[in-house]
Amino acid sequence: MTTFLLPQEITIYEVADIYAELLAVISQSDSLELDGKAVEELDTSGLQLLLWSRNECRKIDIQWKLTSPSDELSQCLELAGFELSDSDSGEAI
Image (cartoon, rainbow, N blue to C red; front, side, top):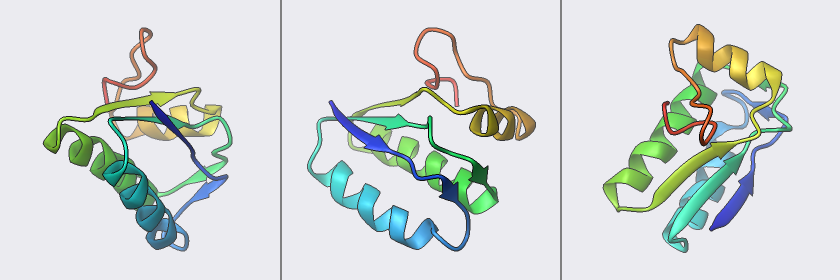
């Protein structure tokens, strides 16, 4: 499993760079774990990026998991109507 540490800020200003990094990681992985412990700021562009990564992994049959979400990341996901499952911290989104 490849672990990708999400940066402190996932906003419209950083999304293009993070997208390019994630695309490269996904293309070389058989599973992807996004570690969200460092996230301090997330906007709707960042949320879309996380959902894209999950959908892209599902499309090409790669396991996707969000682990260790920061309080900020958890709150943003909950505000957007997503639930974090207790078993794997993210398969529910």
